[in-house]
Length: 319
Image: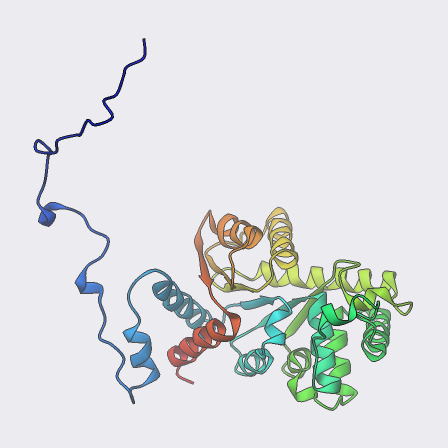
């Protein structure tokens, strides 16, 4: 039998049980509040003014981890999507490589496209919607012919894509080589790897593309990347703006390294992006550090978040 509810009935709260707020555990306290930043103060004062909550605390923890890894001569590995280059972060990363803070850099295939175009022409990133209908997207002659040639020539000499492209940009003296991320890696002897999924990059549409060379050179880079992961204990792995390719590469590399008997744990991983994606969350932040270490997620625009993070690092290392 169903029970009828009086539509005009109310619940009287007079007998509710209460307790004192002074007995209750609370998540927010005025003791964690910070003094606001004063104009003319130092950058360290600005950092100290950040509220001691949520991502402000995570950012400071990540900066501490990177600074500690640098001071202890541990790995600080950067894995990045091409968007980093498109929003002008290449010079920052180049400076960090020169300072010895970033010890390796990994890109997806799109990264070499923008890095080369900036080094050659001083500009990159076409408006896809304007040219897709006419079938002109990705049809810049110089980009495909130069990159496919360099990858093929480099593979013939036993080089991965990252090393081959960085070396060629620098040694062929491209007009804007000083703005190239991969050239900076080559010049500073920082390991650079490129991880390609065949068919995802504009240079794969051209007859100059050599599948054997591209796949083989990318495999060389994967194995070099694995050697870096083997040395990650006590270090930091940063995934900045790669939603699929590099998180998958990292998980497979870590698996291979551990399978071969190398105990790699006690490191910090971080995912930085303007949205939160599934694979970085599980393959970078979650699973790899579940047995020890720490995973951090920072969400925000690369062009703001990354300079803020590394300014914090530089402030801590005293340079």
